Image (cartoon, rainbow, N blue to C red; front, side, top):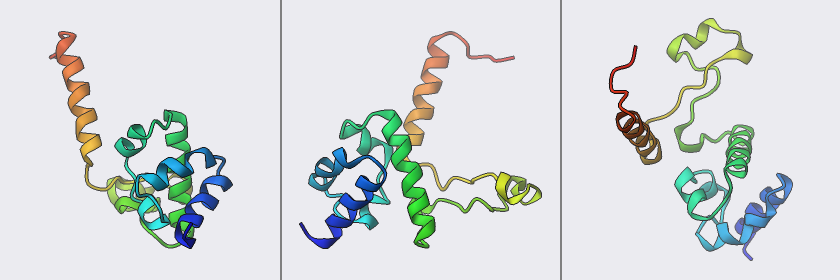
Length: 123
């Protein structure tokens, strides 16, 4: 394996998700730069369970911050949007980047479920 894919395996081993090394490498996530761009749909397609998805996303955010990178345009916790500047630093609200296709699909499915249940008017 090339040194870049070795970095992916080492990262996954460190966070306790080594079992996903081969599927991720086969799917083209063979360096940390690419792995930092992974989306929920990719992980779902690979059969990664929701709890491991959360763990991987959290550890990727931590990795990106510690290496001065910005995964998928993620905002810094100390962002000033949405009044976060009024909060103590450890309570700052994270501000999401632009909506992804996964986010749009989730909102659309949620709305379809509301409409299907007959709850088109809330209040």
